[in-house]
Length: 90
Image (tube, rainbow, N blue to C red; front, side):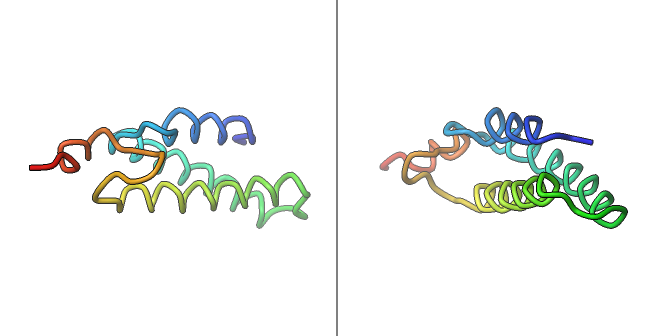
């Protein structure tokens, strides 16, 4: 099973302050795999505190990635390198 560190590493490397659509999509695929494994464990055992926290972190990560992929311009601290040209004044 993926552990908390794997999830945090994915978020740090793929969804950090500087983003690209390619890295966000890769994170989305990895988070889907995390979710599938966590869901399987959720159905097969009595959830532990660690599993509940991992499930919550996975859900939050998925929501962050989905929102980042929907952004059409950069604002605030995080920015997508693929959107820089769109943000330039004309």
